[in-house]
Amino acid sequence: MKFTHLAASLVASISLTAVAAQAADITYVSGAVGNAVEDFKTIVAPWEEATGHTVTLVPMPASTTDQFGQYRLWLAAGTSDIDVYQTDVIWAPQLAEHFVDLSEVAADLATEHFPSIIESQTVNGKLVALPIFTDAPALYYRTDLLEKHGADVPTTWEELTETAQMIQDAERAEGNDDLWGFVWQGNAYEGLTCNALEWVKSFGGGQIVEPDGSISINNENAIAAIELAASWPGTISPDGVLAYQEEEARGVWQTGNAVFMRNWPYAYSLGNGDDSAVKGLFGVTTLPTGGGNDTSAATLGGWNVAVSRYSENQEAAISLAMYLAGAEAQKTRTLLASNLPTIVSLYDDADIASEQPIIPQWKDVFLQAVPRPSAPTKTAYNEVSSLFWSAVHDTLSGNGSAAENLEILEADLQDVMGDGWE
Image 1 (tube, rainbow, N blue to C red):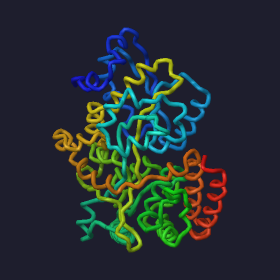
Image 2: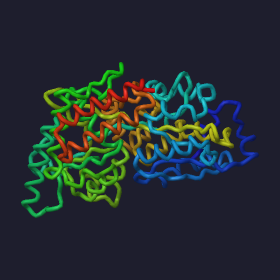
Image 3: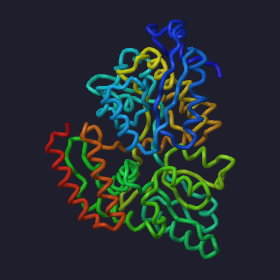
Image 4: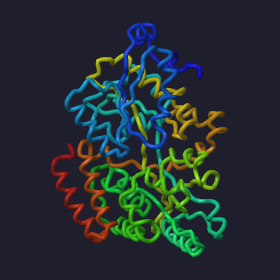
């Protein structure tokens, strides 16, 4: 692969010759799902060759909640052991003080990305992270099973529930005892906040905390959405779904044991791998609407790169961050892992359209993306999210009704709000 984008995108203050003269080993920390570790080696290889630097990847648990906890420990301690952090889209307000301001050095590069994503990584006028890919989940469905049983792709959560149950029952009657109707992420962690926000928003139940800071979660539409989801474990979903994260859901799906799955784009290319039982047997569509509404909601995700203020290799770390956020690396990542680029022009790239035809389709999913309430809750977001997913998980587990648990949640959030969201 020719290394072309780096020279074009880096500003004069980062000279390749000067950087290469003092080769550094950059420590990069990132979560690991699917083939992320192997893909990263391919993505970063041109930068290593061009600069003479090397990158050591420190993989983290797949759980973003666990990742964030570890990041905060490292950053609070001012460790210089980590140079570049791969960060979730929601973390910028909480970690901004620990990262280098990239607003000047990446001014030109930033204009290539979706403005809303750059805005999400800008805190008090400082660009604290650069986007490397965006994310929005979709509904995966088995085309062969829907065709076999004469079913349409569901457009509402109610239709999904009915169709999943019908096909599951019919297949089990034929001896396919391991098949489930629907797999998703029900563990008590950030992923459940994403799933539940989609249910609530699509039912017209708001966004937990609204952009103006008002608490909206305790309402009839939100209650109806979560009560419907609470009917899934043990019926169309295994009881164990309450411990599933992304990889557990994908494992069931990719072995051919689910009709529907809610997951992120990375699962698409893996599902079409040679070792997949569902290769060529599935499609994707926007997540269902709910409760008589025509709103489909997909949680806005995505990952970014931030340079630690405590890094002893800041020039090389900034160089790496800008390369990973650039068109060459984003294109490679898209072709390898079907990750959604944040650079607008790549949605019209002929190679991507040819090798990953799902990417143009995912643009419709992305347009339905709903942000988590990290902006209005600021540094309190993790506490807000934890309270939300705990209330939802209690309901899904049969520990109280949605109405009871959301009333308690509202009171808990009011207590947090009393601290000023700071």
